[in-house]
Image 1 (cartoon, rainbow, N blue to C red):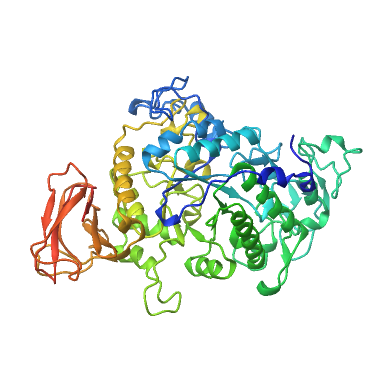
Image 2: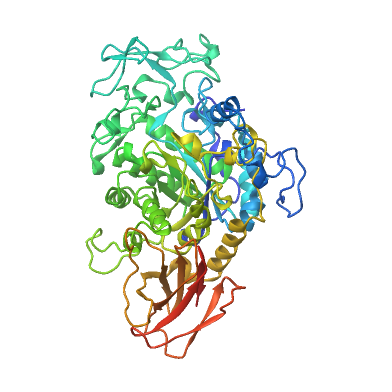
Amino acid sequence: MVEQRLSDLEFALLLDRDFHPSPVAWEDQVFYFLLLDRFSDGREDGYLANDGRSARGTTPLFRSGDAGNAIGTAADAERWREAGRTWAGGTLRGLASKMGYLQRLGVTAVWVSPVFKQVASVDSYHGYGVQNFLDVDPHFGDRDDLRRMVETAHAHGIRVVLDVILNHSGNVFAYDPDRYWTDDGRGGRFLDPRWDGRPYRVAGYRDAGGGPSLPFGAIDLAVHEDAWPDGAIWPAELQPADRFTQKGRIDNWDYDPEFREGDFADLKDIHLGSGDLDNYAPSDALAALCRAYKFWIAFADLDGFRIDTVKHMDPGAVRFLASVIHEFAQRLGKENFSLIGEITGGRQRAYETLEVTGLDAALGIDDVPDKLEGLVKGYRAPGDYFDLFRNSLLVRKESHVWFRNKVVTVIDDHDQVRKGQQKARFCAGDDRWRRLALPALALNATTLGIPCIYYGSEQRFDGAGGDDRYLREAMFGGEFGPFRSRDRHCFDETTPVYREISHVLAVRREEPALRRGRQYLRDISGDGVNFGPPVPVGGELRSVVAWSRIFDERELVVAINTDAGGERSAWVTIDAGLHREGDVLRCLYPGDGPVTAVPVEARNGLAVRLTVPAAGFVIYG
């Protein structure tokens, strides 16, 4: 039974057990981010199950000839596109059935999109439109499915970080606006409730059909019994009218306080409190949400939260949440429960937010993926990416401060805010980008930060289009499958990128330097005499790009080749204090490469000559 009120939760029963411990260091982990609705429905055929045996199902494995099978006609293509707007069918049981797939890839932490019950009348398959913060959406399963999924993950050495929302609920009420007549583009006009700093009238909470027929306030189920479970908002502590700011939608996303007080599109902004950072008074709504999330930690044995839309909340509210959650998790023996904030607005804002709120890490969704993608594709100087992690100016210290555990680094994600309205995964477009997928993922895995793979990247998904849906292909097929396909799944452990990145991540597990070491972009040379940093020539970089990770007295030299068309060689500078002329660096990846070792020579101090295959990647140490 799902409780209607927070006061009905029986925490004593939840806490009477042992809990899964936190990892010693989150920088040792490899994240995998998935949208639950788009990952697995558990019906796939021919994939390797959790025990490594071939599984039986109804959806066949994708083959190259299946690309485009959903768009043979204009009507088919429209059907495929429209399928991307709504629920696809992924479930918690489906995710649990793929923990072996993730474990064999090298994943040690799975970040799952929100699982909470959504507004019933809206197709918010992504999970960010919550109507009941104490229940799992029936599209995904139920509470026990969540608990079993986490248990299965833990049995495979995988932690679970759940995406949570503090800033807003789903579209649980309707405004009764009195200002801002606006053309609707079809010859009509409507009153547009956009933010101007003043509250709007509210017509009522929405019922199960989406109409605002329920009173806007605490719901008496004796009078409005149809409000449960699909009407208004739950738990009941969130129903009083003062739980929401009621100031209309955000129009200017960079104006403060508009982006903190306004609604995130049609999602309704929750009033979290007031006051400056050191004297913040949390609201009853914030206290209620914190208690709800404490319940989920205890109920499902979660290992961390990814916190949505941190930019849109008062820093004091975020600090309150961080304190409450960290203390509760420590009570359960989770000494290193991770709180990862989605902090848009640039690196400076992200760093300052971490400093004042107590969040553990920021999700690198602004300049990190932009510069990482540009480096691998050859249109950005490598220093642009590597300098993101040399933060002496940012933290006002002259010595290097290495953010190895303060940022979760990604290439692709489900929003790609940085790309505006034209979205595109890394592999979209030019076939060169598909060939460069391995060095992109390997670069992300072996440079500073906590690496995160966006689901499907290991299978070279190439979604692109005019809105977010094209970044959210259903990995299990269905009506909105990847590569413009239908009814074909992509859980294939034999594909080149899956196979090779699993080898790279195996080396990362064995080598502390790749997880915790200092990082240096290395000067290179073509002739062994003239050295310098790799830079684009004529706007394009087709070159070896090499860096070192140094931990204690061990240096690993890592390199990619941004040229997808041919092998490249270069002399690479190494640390003269850790090596001597005549030493040998051995190849750790690829293990079956033609060059198994390279000698250290006296060039530019000390250097080694590395040869990297076209669109390739190597590790020496």
